Length: 344
Image (tube, rainbow, N blue to C red; front, side, top):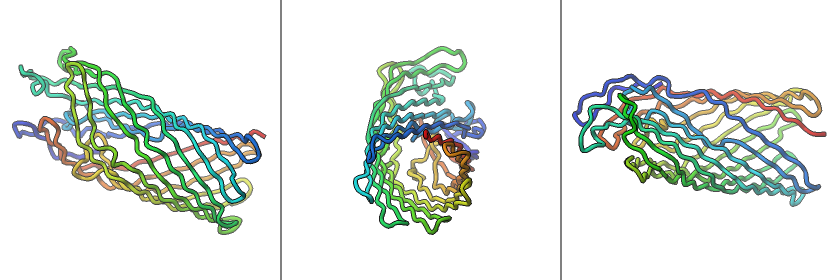
């Protein structure tokens, strides 16, 4: 929930409007995974998931309406892969990622600032674009001892050229005052992860991991238009990040297993470049979960995560000189349920 002290424009007077309400939305994120042995040493796998995504949505009349109202990015990643058991201790994996991105951005525009003949009204900007692209992923797992295994995974960057349509609609009349085809470049970053799993005894195991993500590829949010809709560019200048996790699992009996974990996740967004579209800050994850073996071929997993987010502060100036200052009270709750079906 954001709390803003004020926003000002060309005249220096504060803009009217509320704090935008709860900018976070509930979302259902499905996923699907399938694996099948090809022979004694090779397994085929298929994963369908959503590795990147964001949704923030404010009230149309909030104080930061010229900075952003709705920001909605969805990804669908289709990941066929092969895994090979090279030796008794070493396994290798390779996959291809076919990825679709859908992006929608809305905000209010001061029509007087966009036109040589100023109009005393607001216009609502709506931008929609999408793209398909591809990348790859690599993995290696090494059984260092009978109780300890090590894993290293890498996912390549995926570069997207998004294309779509943009309009500006006059709020008072509903008339379209600007439109055009739009395009923009987005590079979803590469990442590398290292993980350790150690079996303490037949009941307890401990896990740890560290992940690096090259968010520094996100330099700006640039929209190009070939129509009457003006092009725009917003500096982002994100930074590379690290994420560290530690987990513990307990096999209670043949039916039940329990897990818990904690992680620290750095934000790529510095205070200088934080915007209301993605008001991120450093996060601490605390998670618990359980597994129930219903039968020899059906297993159910469930988990709950609460993410503590350091309160983000914002001091953002848009291209027309409107300044937005304030602070967010942020947190995230995640509930996950999955079923595994083993074809015997």
